[in-house]
Structure formats: structure tokens, C-alpha cells
Image (cartoon, rainbow, N blue to C red; front, side, top):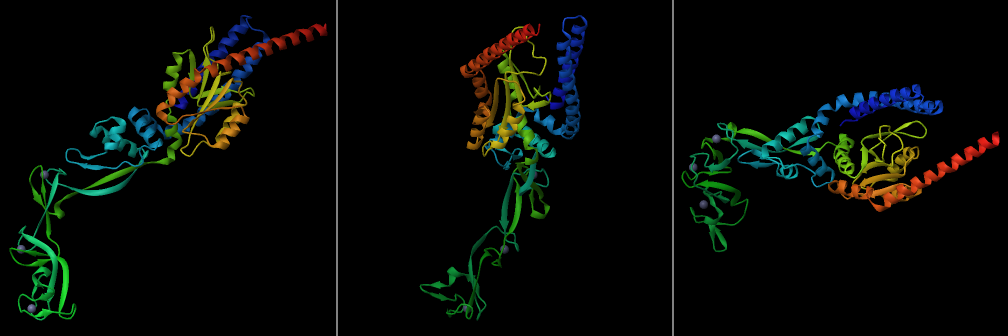
Amino acid sequence: MSVRSELENLKVKAEKALSELEDKYFKKELSEDQYKKWKNRLEDYLRSLHKQIEAAGSEDSLSLERSLLYEKSEAQKLLTAFLDERVKRLIPIIDKEYGVRYPEVEKVTGLSALDTIVLIDQLAESNILSASIYSKGIKCPRCRSNNILAQYVCPYCQSPDFDKGKVIEHFKCHYMDFELKFKKETELLCPRCNSVLKNLGVDYQKHGPWFKCSSCVKFFDEPLATYSCGDCGSVFELQQAVFQSLYSYTLNMNYISEYEKVTIPLKQLEEQLAEKGWILKTPAFIIGVSGLMHQFSAALWFKKEGLEAILPVDPDIILEVYTSSTGITADKVLSFAVKAQDVDCRVKLIVGIPRFESKAIELAEHYNIELLPVRNREIFIETVVNYVLSREVSERLRLQTAETAALEDALKMLDEKLVGEGD
Ligand SMILES: [Zn+2]
Ligand SMILES: [Zn+2]
Ligand SMILES: [Zn+2]
């Protein structure tokens, strides 16, 4: 789901909550204080939602083509392989049946050779992949097959019967032949005039390697190439051949933040945790204690009886996912800490793919932020689920709940006391 549709969803819910609130107040099920407090909070929330929906609108139209591609699981797999650096560049190979194939992509996506080409074309058209010419091959001009065999003949008589070697030219009698024919023990002897060849450049010259045709006995420096098609049998010269460019592809890093979002399987995480009694919202828009709204990769609520997490407040866990092959920096931890501090929440968690820098770890400790490193995207769900269901987290949630309850009790007592004293 796109950010925009998630925002629209929240807007509908918030509007519904607001009308329910009015209703309850009208039926006198709420005190005026409670009503005002919630009304203010909801109205603030709706205002900031409107702003975000406007901002998301302009981004969405630009990336519509890309976002459609991102929904394909094969595209996600390929992007994941790029981001995990299992794939760096898509290299073509010539294939007799399909023309060109990208075996690496076939392996990563599980697609057929032809579907792989289609996917690569779509990704290149929408600028997710950048193409560059890798090589030029030739195809049969008649049947377009690239099952081509090159053959070489004498350019004078088209005979395929020729040899290659260093050639000696004797200046005095103008005789030319392969060096081998001049060799007599340690000397060079002209087979035509029987003179001994002494000084290179004075008596004789060396050429080549050249070619000599056995049929017409002529020398030439390049044989003529002809090509024959392995499929239809037609024979043609280079001038008539159809040229085919083969492309290699790299990932266009301009949209790296989009790839990172789509390759993190938060929706699957939502399904898995739902079975264990957790509600997960992604992306999550949470109203802070200050009334400002903050966006997180996800927020989690443990389902308690009678609680429906309609309102985006007070989650049990807020979670942000960052990725960086060189390690998540302290900057990222700090930017998370700023918004996380404004949220009344038991566990504040950063998931880092694949690791954190040591400064980031220090800073997280200082701000009481949990860090969860995940080595690669393939084990993302498993690692996060294990963490959320861990004893450490559940104990922490219980403890915090107990603390909160104790605090509430204390405040209530204080309140009663103050009211009592006021009498
Ligand atoms: Zn010839
Ligand atoms: Zn000679
Ligand atoms: Zn052919």
C-alpha cells in the first residue's frame, strides 16, 4: 500500500472517531474535559494528515510507474539482491534459443528466460535500472537467429585453404615466402636464387604474420570473413549482418530510499505478528505528546481486550528500519530519537540492516533506544518476530504497564488529596 492510501485510510478513521466522540458527548457518556481533550487531539491530527496527504500526492504521481513495479514480488527479489550486494551488475549472455539471457536474474527471481527479459525492460523503462552497451553481436539477416558461425576464406579466390605465418621478402629476386622455407640450419637461404640472407632491412624484410592461399598462392594480411546461420543455413558477409546490442544493467541509485522501503517486508511482518496477538501499522503516523505527528516505519500494539487500535496513539512499540551497507550511523539514531522522545511508548526500536556503527550504539544507549541488527533482508521477518515475542520485550511491556498503573494510582490519590484539602 502506498503512503498516500495509508494516509487516506487514517483520515477516514480519524473522522469516524471524531463523530463517535461527538455522539458520546451528546449522549453524555463523556465528561466535557474528556471530550475537549480528545476533540483537540483529533483535530490536530486531522490537520497534519491533510498536510501530509498533499505532500504525498505530488510524489505519488511521479512514481506511479515505479510503484506498480515495486508491487511485483520478482522486482522486489531483484532489488533485494542488489541491496544485499548479491548482484551488482546484470550481465547478458548470448543464447541460441532466446537471443540473450540474464541467468543471474533468472536465478534471483525464479522467472523464465523470456519473462526475465520483460521484467528487465520494464525496470529499465521506468529508470530503476540503467542500461549500458555491453557488447555487439550479429544476427542472421534472413531469420534473425544469433546462432552464427564465422568462416574465413582467401579474399582473392574464396578458397578456405590458407596458412598463417611470418613472411620473408628477398629484395634481390623479389621472392616471398614463409620464414620456414628460408631456414637452412642456422642460415636463411633464398629458395629461388640460393643467396644467403644476411642483414635484415638491407637484404631482406620480414612481414606478418600474413596469410598465404594454397590455391592461388597469393599473400594477404586478412582473410575474408563470411558467416553462416546455424538455423537457416544462409551465408552472408558482415555488411549484410544485423547487429544486436547487448546491454548490461546497474541499479539507478536515485531512488534508493524507495527500494529500501519496498524490500523491507513490513506487510508480511504485520501478518505474522497478527497471529500472535499484535496489531502492526505500516507506515505508522503517531501523534506525539506534543500533538505533532510523526511517521515511523511501523508501530505495534499488543491486542488487549476491548482495545481496538483505531487511534494512532500510544503504541507499545515504535519501529524504524534503516539500511546501509557501511553501517547505520549515529545521525540516524539521533533523528529517530528526536521524534521517538515525543511518543509515549514502551519500546523504541531501530532495526538496522545489516549493522550499526559503534557511535550509533553508544548514542542509542544514551537515549534508551533498542537496536536490532539484521544481517540481511531474508531473515528480517524472523529476526523481528523473535525480538517482539521475546521474554525481554514482554517483561518490559508488563513492567512498564505496572509502572504506569502505579503512577496513575499515585496521581489519583494526590488529586483526591488536593481536592480534599481544597474543601
Ligand atoms: Zn586464393
Ligand atoms: Zn632470392
Ligand atoms: Zn538464418
